[in-house]
Length: 327
Image 1 (cartoon, one colour):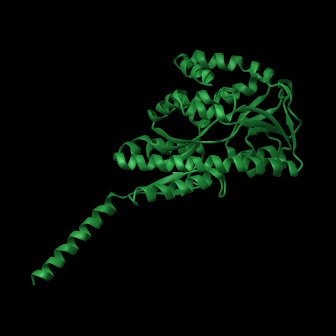
Image 2: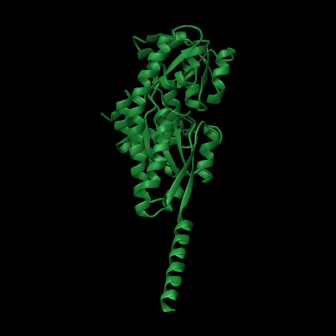
Image 3: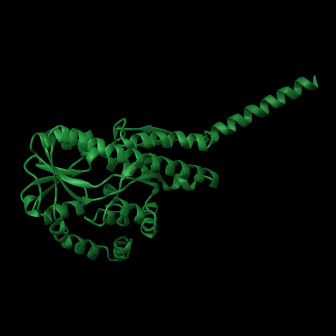
């Protein structure tokens, strides 16, 4: 009788423990704008796997790709509110919300991609991350998004004068609009998903983006000139809602950070391969690619953009100088 009672008590204790474990488990909702097979998509899926593994199932992540939960701007707000717990964002659309993040959208602020990562791994990156975290967006790791260059339906771009009169799609950020205006063009902010049709119907003459985005969206099919201005080198982040992360215990936080860093390492590796593949594919399709022999006139044209930005954000001068002085 006692043995039977012991088994009943033990069974009840196990059931209670399991119930408590289930109640403690968290399921995060994850957002990503990219398509299946894209380096960022693969990395975010890997992040979800790693989080579940490293937390022993205490935290799981259900990823939603292809922007099915809304546009990037919508998802940024959802993450800040906690409706989405984790996401992969480009820092461009975050800039209007987080002044520190907006600094990376200054044209030619980074010398190259390696310089960008050296900045992000140092004091400059900490200043940016702290500013984002204060506004509900905590970056756990940085993704590579390559360098953005101009592409259009009209002609190669070799000088700022070649942009004059062109209607160019840009992300929704005043810095990008200012950049196009200083080159004599007409900026046209619009959602990324609308660009293909806008190019096809000549609503815009051109846009600007990296190799994989230009290729994966089919933009090269309707805009056959790609000019290597490399005017913007904007990182992407694997970000989590600040309050959600702060509510975790130290062990869980460490596990989530480790998962993010491993996912970022995978993304950067896949990105390097994808850039090569994308360029080869569009060149094979007949896209006319041109190097810009001298980018100095483009860089000099950006002086008013920097001046206006720093006048409006004098407290960010130190961050700008930190980035520029990072070797």
